[in-house]
Image (cartoon, rainbow, N blue to C red; front, side, top):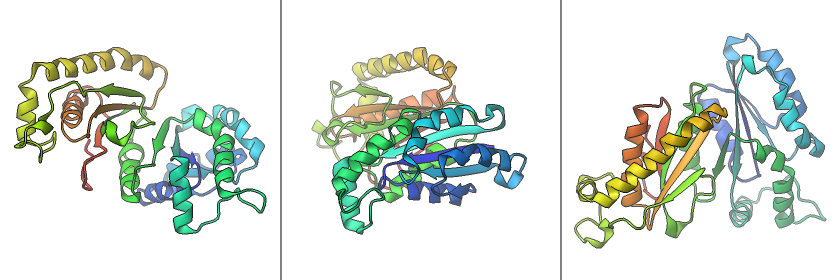
Length: 290
C-alpha cells in the first residue's frame, strides 16, 4: 500500500495537491482525523483498488492530536505500506494575499482572531507535522499549474521506496528555495548573460551549452558538486531519506545554474532510478524533466 499524507498551512495548495493525486489514481480523503490513520491502514489492507491512498491533515484536527502524530505514524505496520509525508507552506505575506483574493475564511479565524494571527497560529499548530515531513514544498512563487506539475513529478510518479532526487536551478535575485536540502552558488562562473549573442538563450540551448562546456571553471564546479553529493547521498539513503532537493543558483536562474542542473541530472540518472530536474525561473509548462 502507498500512503501519502498531505499537510500544510491553509492556502498553501493542499487541495490542489490532493486533486492531482486523485487524478493519478489515488483514493483521497480530505481532513482525516489523525487518530484514524491506523484504522485506515487496517481497513485498506489487501484491497487492490485502495493500493494508493492519500489523505490531507490540516488545522481542523483536534489541536493535541498533532503532538501525537509521530507516535501514530510510528505505530503503523511499516512492512505493509510505503509512507510519504508531504508538507506545503508559503510565506505569510503570500498566504494573506491568497485569502484576500479568494475571500475564503481561514479555519482558525474568529471574531477574536484576525487572519494574520490565524496564519501564525496555524504554523505553530502544524509544527509537529512539518518536523517529520519527508518532503517540504514552498509554494510561495508557484502557480497552481506549477504546483500540480511538481506534485505529479515528485509524489505521484514516485513508484518505489528509492530516494527521489530533485536538481533545481534558481536565480538568487528571486530568492533562495527554502525547501532545498543543499544550495550551491555558481555565480562565480563565467556568465553567458554578458554576451549579447547568448543572452536570449538558456542553459538548455546549444549556444549556451557550448559556451559553458568550454570553460574549465564550469567543469571543475560541476565535478566538485557531483563529488560532494556522491559522497554523502548514501548516508541519507541509509537513514531512510525519501527525498533530496539540491538547488543550484546563479544570478538570474537562466544560464549557469540551468546548465549545471541539466548535467547533474544526466549523470545521476545513470546511477539512481528516480532523478528529476526543475528550472524554477524558466517560463513554460514543460520545464520539468525526469
